[in-house]
Amino acid sequence: MTQAADPARAADPTTLMVPAGLKPADGRFGCGPSKVRPEQVAHLASEGAAVMGTSHRQQPVRALVGRVRSGLRELFGLPEGYEVVLGNGGTTAFWDAAALGLVRSRAQHFAFGEFSTKFAAVTKGAPFLDDPIVVKAEPGHAPTIAYQHGVDLVGWAHNETSTGVAVPVSRPAGSEGALVAIDATSAAGGLPVAAEDFDVYYFAPQKCFASDGGLWLALMSPAALDRIAEISAGDRWIPEFLSLATALDNSVKEQTYNTPSVATLFLLADQIEWMLERGGLSWTTARTAESSARLYAWAEATEYTAPYVADPKHRSPVVGTIDFADSVDAAVVAKVLRANGIVDVEPYRKLGRNQLRIGMFPAIEPDDVTALTRCVDWVVGHLGWPLGPHRPISPQCGGASASARPSTIRGRVQSAPRSGRVIEYPA
Image 1 (cartoon, rainbow, N blue to C red):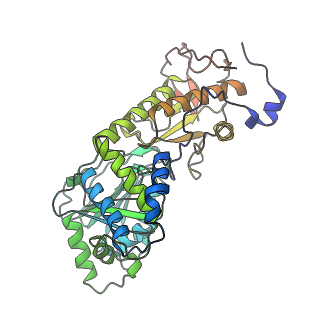
Image 2: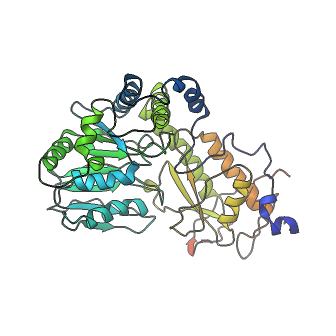
Image 3: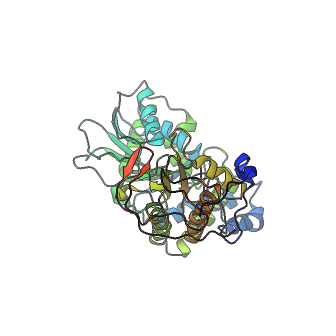
């Protein structure tokens, strides 16, 4: 039985009140900035108060930087000779620094979304570098990583935050002598990686590490350190703020070139230690795998949704992108959820798809991901949208259909039959 339309709800769907028993314990599902655990904030207010407002050149703050660097070394199992380097400005600043301090003459980029394209744009715009080789894949798809002779740096994103496509990290065949530089902004701490497979693994702390932005961190191999020394010894002009040699020199002294956000460092150190106490990278990657398995299973079993990334092996465990049938307005769903305290599930703005994007970083509870899917089902059911030309959703029976009728998702026909699933919607 289809629910009768409520004129007030039709005029303003955000007046819908999701039952408290359905809601996640924490409604933050952003893909960056992401959920900060309440315990981190409490620790900052208590233990962190002593270092807030003190000099970053003195021992208390330098000890905090040391906790970050030693924690990351342990978390990623860095071999002897690797360094943890950090500086201000976030990943965006690091792209400029890398073009200045890591690329000798020509880079190769694999671009498959908004952020993996940005580093390529930086090296293309650098007047002191040859034009890069850019291998593109359409959003939602992953490129084939293959080294092209003549480049001295190969780069791609471990996880493309804009689309939810993950590409494993391994050294391309024949790339000896070239640096492998991986943008791990939304991947580091949530996806498996081995240090031997990269020379530079760079990221920011506002995703898996549940801190604030404005800082970049890079795990660097001896080959990357040698490249920094080689380029800095040449005649290329490099601003001190973007100098990786300067960042390295300060990092080994447990400090940054210019004043950092001490609160960001404190939240970051707290999150790293929280991860290590629970088993390190093997624990965090199992947790994100569990969260994402729940999300994608729901999306595949629900008649009006489908994972945006078609190839399961490239579906991100930390950023889930879910397409909705044309008959369901995902933007309205997101507005209703936001009005109910479930926030930041909107898609990446430039992608322009009828979808939701869900962060599943280690700080996010897998049970909260499950609760989110139930809330989406409840909202869609209570808005009374039809699933397609034949069958509307009702509050009593929604989600999956046992029929094998094809369902159109954003113009693509999903011909595989859905498993039967009955959802009970509370009033």
